[in-house]
Length: 93
Image (tube, rainbow, N blue to C red):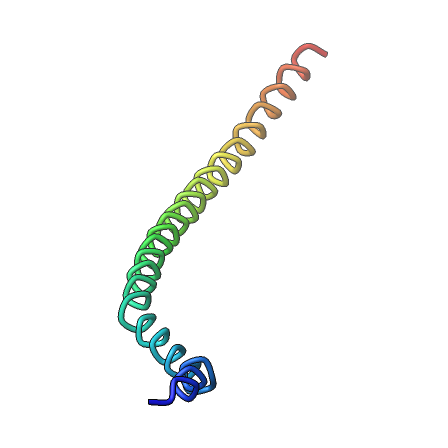
């Protein structure tokens, strides 16, 4: 057996090809499922964050409508106060 040929084969392009094939196989068998599970977990967390954000936006919209209603009611009440002040002023003067 020619040891020189064996060493050249293992350390040369054929050895690099075998090593890269083995690494790709390991990545496909071990690392890919781990990454897939991680990404699915991140997707679920992101989905929960989006739902929370949508809930916050809906809540702010409801608060805004309440605020607008209160402001328009306040404007009407302010007009009534102005009328009352005008009436009192006319009676005093």
